Length: 305
Image (cartoon, rainbow, N blue to C red; front, side, top):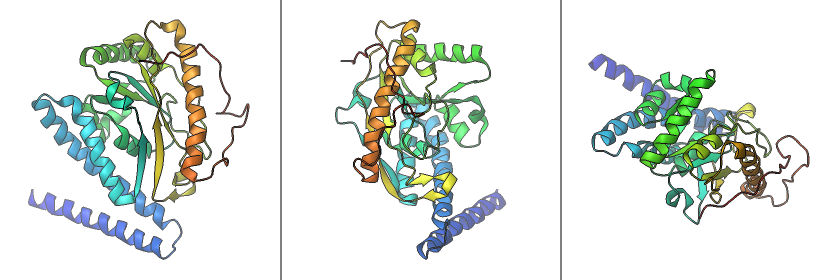
């Protein structure tokens, strides 16, 4: 045991030394050193928070507060990332929709791996995430997600996914547990503000559970983090919580209109937030008919009280 602990201490020391060295190289203008430094620091923060999450999930389950596991770990990642990388998300929710509207299906645009930090900053209490089944076996992160009640979906097995949706709908109603989903289904890595076509799963889930949808829009932050260009800088990224959309009385036949309408609302807000994030009012303009900006028509959305 002593040998194992000594080896862990050695690896940790080397890791921290690599982070410090990369930051020093960045300070003297070495290209891409800042990307390496913050990437290494982010990974360390993620592993540390996941390990904490495993312990916290077990402890909170034992005292009857297992539904708070993902919230408390999200906050730990938020603060560790702010300290390690200087990056954070500013959550604009003046009406307190995230805390007042429960249960709900929360949906947001999905850009890069940095969205994990966005969840750390905005994740409300009594909420969980859904994830692809393969993440269940990832060390540390997968262990935490399993213990904290995440819902794993099998994309290659549509029947199993539908069963998972039905189970999730029951859990939402019975436990008043909200869920957060990325309806794009994958990261966009968009350089400019755009949104991939939405998948319908989150909207079917909200309709099945008869709970509101809360759209959350994050500004395009490629000027702060863009892995394809090895960009990783410190900064604050705006994120806005939109008014909840009621699904009361809706059926599966209404899902297509619900998807189109929600995506349209989020696209409009995305343009405004991106201008705010970059400090360039009017610099980001909608391109009619361009991929990701096409405005959709659909049934009128009903706002939840």
